[in-house]
Amino acid sequence: MELFKYMEMYDYEQVLFCQDKESGLKAIIAIHDTTLGPALGGTRMWMYNSEEEALEDALRLARGMTYKNAAAGLNLGGGKTVIIGDPRKDKNEAMFRAFGRFIQGLNGRYITAEDVGTTVADMDIIYQETDYVTGISPEFGSSGNPSPATAYGVYRGMKAAAKEAFGSDSLEGKVVAVQGVGNVAYHLCRHLHEEGAKLIVTDINKEAVARAVEEFGAKAVDPNDIYGVECDIFAPCALGGIINDQTIPQLKAKVIAGSANNQLKEPRHGDMIHEMGIVYAPDYVINAGGVINVADELYGYNRERAMKKIEQIYDNIEKVFAIAKRDNIPTYVAADRMAEERIETMRKARSQFLQNGHHILSRRRGR
Ligand SMILES: NC(=O)c1ccc[n+]([C@@H]2O[C@H](COP(=O)([O-])OP(=O)(O)OC[C@H]3O[C@@H](n4cnc5c(N)ncnc54)[C@H](O)[C@@H]3O)[C@@H](O)[C@H]2O)c1
Ligand SMILES: CC(C)C[C@H](N)C(=O)O
Image (cartoon, rainbow, N blue to C red; front, side):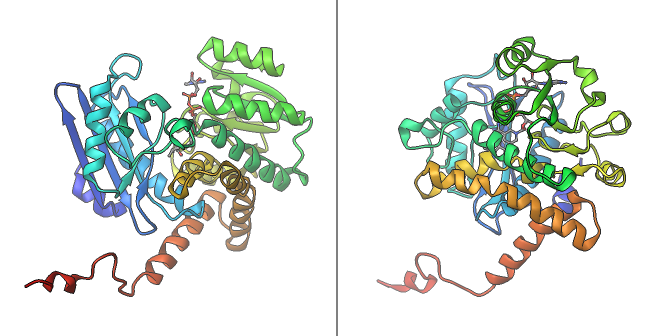
């Protein structure tokens, strides 16, 4: 990849490569856009096949956070970190301490939190080196694990999508096919079960499936069969890129609404499902509950306030549908438009000079 060319194309601000030989830390922090505020985005730890693949993931995810934070109405820009390594084997205290010091060096331009492969315990270690970390343990006044908040947001957004597709937002009796029943989807299934939805689940982790079957009466299917099951709603909660040329012809659902990031393999797949009349709740709008929850820590965490804002994901999804209808475009384009409009408006509103802290002329004092 020609990095600067790519950065220019999508207007990235900064990319940092961080290494610490002793602990084995190899991290890439990508800061996409800080127009709205400091870049907030989680740290993903993953066994990438190459440095190129890690870099691509960091860049793509960082840009996604710019859109997610903007669409959620947060005063935050977008960034993300990837750490190259196996989260089950390669973690150690020194690694996260070293990483924390790199974050501290950015002086608040980037704030981190959990993502795939990292946990509250990892964030607690980072917190020993920097204040610019969220999702740490509640005993530090923090919001803790963001997954239940993400799940609640997905549940709210799914209801808005159901209203659009079926004329009612009730999920009672609706059949929901859930791909991946991990941290987020476990809590999502709980909300759905409580409302009387019927669940079909799959996961490559047999224990996760067994738990959903036992606790929520879910029906289990093999991972490859989830796309084609008879259902009203398909909830992708595992991987990115699962809406693609192979899976789209199998889909029977009228709605796609789930937590996974980057669900569309390519933008044209968003066009394809739009043409098929499937109601798609754009991923970064519906899965913003976690980031809304951790962002509340910046004001001194208040759970009630955070949950109220997460509830509004219902309204955000409705706004996306309204823009899609107004402009006659697919919902994934409408979501981008909503986020970009907010960033542009705020960029313009900030174009007048405002002194921030010490005025530059104050340096003359004492001369
Ligand atoms: N955790 C959050 O707060 C949060 C916030 C926003 C977005 N997300 C996104 O939501 C998704 C799920 O996040 P999570 O925190 O629940 O992760 P997780 O790792 O706890 O859960 C993912 C589950 O998917 C399963 N899985 C992996 N590959 C699969 C396959 N091929 N078929 C079926 N199942 C498969 C895994 O075994 C795991 O149980 C991810 O895409 C993540 O980026 C999470
Ligand atoms: C800040 C984190 C809670 C972000 C989360 N991992 C996401 O993708 O939205």
